[in-house]
Image 1 (cartoon, each protein chain N blue to C red):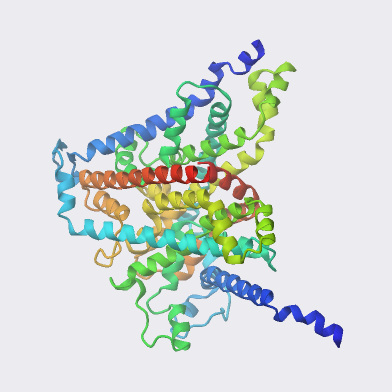
Image 2: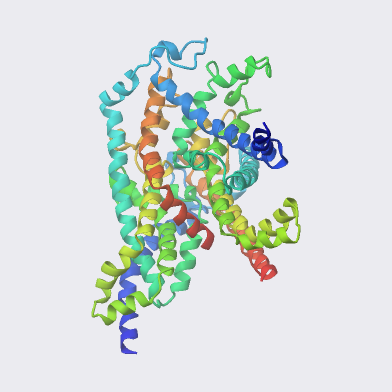
Length: 287
Length: 298
């Protein structure tokens, strides 16, 4: 009995009282975060007649995959996904190469006007993307890029490159210079040093900018809707947005489409969040 | 000495840096100048007129435009509300998770989820939650007896902005949270230990140690959040397109409408330049204050 009392006592002390309030706060907020997702996901599993009934039911009575099947059977929507996959990978590939090289250059070489160039990169964060839609609309037509996948790739590369360059530069800055000096003494060429010695050390940084560019490219909307008007070149965000306001929206299919568009970035983000958090905070804190 | 020179030979440095800088020069520098230039021109695609310089007429036309004032007001409400909310909630979550809590990893992950999602998809999910007849929110609130009449959500000018803000903040709070959390984890534990020995209260520790130590991070979060929120477009546009009756127009959504619904490229450019100026002014303030903060700390 005595023993029992002693073990239970902390539960009623001030500290634990406070702890339980903190825990309650975390739980309530987690419910607020997860509820909209759950509601949308459940809708994607409900047959049409269960969605459009005024007698709201939380769980689907007869869960169905009909909405997902309809999407896979719809060539137009599959095309949206294909376009998104292709542009996201292409843009990310170009960004990672350009940013890694430039970040290394800025970090290690004494470049004329290097400081000024870095200031330009930081200033790029202040420019509102919306101010580029009119110039790009015209520019892409002049360059014969309007209504091409190229236009989608170019706009993504341009707007994520400055931040990625700054981010990876901060990773290079954190490696001691002795590393290259030792390699050079051992007779490694400058470029060989970069590829064989330095790159493996900053792989965390490379992964970080990869995730950053991929997520942003996948989710991009403003330029995707501006530089492309043809149905067959739309990305998934534009495809989703175009359904809104159409008469008789099929919410089940729309929610299924949303869920499918969210899955790839969420999976990548969740499996690599450790990298991303480290890189992002490094970039944000130093910027 | 010779080896040092070889390592830092400049040519290779330029080879590394020039492609990126060229891309930025051509695709950011040039279009930006062009946009500023366009803001002084009469460019109306549908009119068939040749573009001509008209001085400040586009800006004057903005100043006499009722929607412009709605958009400016809404943009400021949007930014101030969002940034304050992000900061307060982010700090609360960061403090709650900067300690050993049961299910810490789970809560941290949950509070990052919305940030990986596109504004478009989040906008649609919330439109589904706000559905005029089929909203579960109305259902729950009615059953709890909190409301008698259905909430009208996005369909009335009175409340539409509030519901856009809720959806937007649901998606964007994680950034402040995660940056503040990593800031808290960088504070040396010795500071708190010393305060404990001196018998400081939790309150004192928060205001004398946590806040001053976090000042530069808080400033950074506020700057980035302000700049990003101010230029944000996707979710508000998808949810309302500025409606009903222009009540939810932000400066960004109004630029888009001017450009691609009214095809008034000149006026759209003028409004863009206006957004840019506000962003630059805010950044100046930021630089000024962060210098001040550095002097104080240092």
